[in-house]
Image 1 (tube, rainbow, N blue to C red):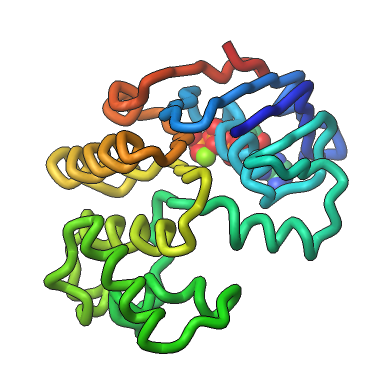
Image 2: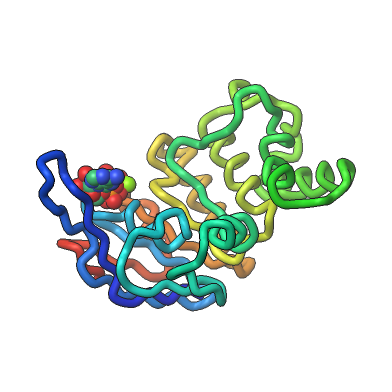
Length: 221
Ligand SMILES: Nc1ncnc2c1ncn2[C@@H]1O[C@H](COP(=O)(O)OP(=O)(O)OP(=O)(O)O)[C@@H](O)[C@H]1O
Ligand SMILES: [Mg+2]
């Protein structure tokens, strides 16, 4: 499902020096896996996730995800890939404050789909049911707890039926109890067949994964 070979990514620092963050990363993730990539702050976890998810094209190496070879894809094709093949969950939930839970979940329909309003509403409702929020379709983000907001973000991610769910510190803003609910939800979605790749420095996320890798000094092991 994910094949990455020889990934290298450097940034210019303020003084014009090159900082090499990824220094030859190889990764192979099969369909249906739940993989966690751990590493300390600044080790390059978000950098790697952005490359694998088609959010960053400025790297050396080769990436294929869900049958699409991302390397060298034009911007339009890359954004189509992001819209149709994968989905993201971030530490800060990125919900639109003025939209209800259901409308936040249906947001991808405004970008990609041609579905009717009823169809969109039904799909958003189904996604919210899947994350246990059937009773809170019409709540605004401010009327939801942190854990519930993250579950809305996960429902939005599921809305497009992605092949891979990419998560960047998905429990970083959650306390122990709400964090474990969200982690259990990833486990459940994975057992239903979704491929999950999470980057995190949190042990509690990695214990839920079926395979744990370490990112250190630009290498994955
Ligand atoms: N756009 C950028 N320009 C310059 N340097 C960057 C840029 N993005 C990231 N970096 C640097 O690259 C390194 C890796 O950053 P990255 O965000 O991938 O780390 P991370 O492992 O996700 O860290 P954290 O756990 O804190 O989220 C850091 O030293 C960071 O300062
Ligand atoms: Mg990060």
